[in-house]
Amino acid sequence: MRDPPFSHRVVSPAYSLNRLGGLCVSMESYRFFWSREVALAQHNLSEAWQSTPEDHRVFTRVPFAHSVRWFSGDGEGGVATVRNISRSGASVSLGRYLRPGPVVRIAFDGFEYAGGAVDVQALTVWCRPEAGAPDRFIAGFKFVQGERRTLGAVSEVFYAAIRQYAETHDLH
Figure 1 (spheres, helix red, strand yellow):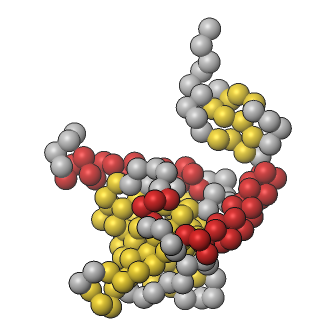
Figure 2 (cartoon, helix red, strand yellow):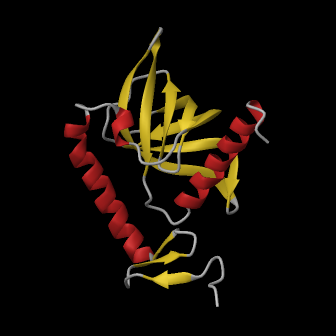
Figure 3 (tube, one colour):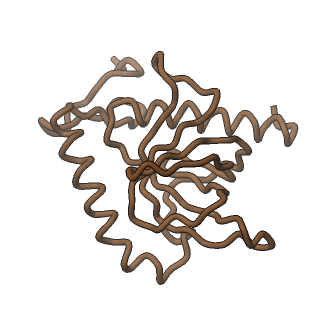
């Protein structure tokens, strides 16, 4: 007898895998993994500048033209345009330089997930001037899986990017 599509297989007391490969983590484990993920990512930034951002990608990026709002922990913020997105991060074009390291909040305009706006935490991994636009910068963000709804919310936006790409390239 086959497992139902969303059944869970216990891997350890901290987390389990559903049949589709999704990770299901308890709230206590979320807090632990989130703080560990941020600490490890910030620790590895000193070595990351030596290689290109593309070297560190695990998931496929999909081109996506969409506006977002970003907010830093020190009260700064602004509007940016997503260039591409994956289930683990995004590249955006913005009007100022962001120092790699800090975690920011990114709000995807016009998207909702589980009754709320899509607003996720992301680690600033890299930032560089945009070619041909001296007053613009391109930044790379890694989504921080610190909140239970982050993966679902990011997936909602990612699938919209796939749909947008299919429609603009007549692939539907």
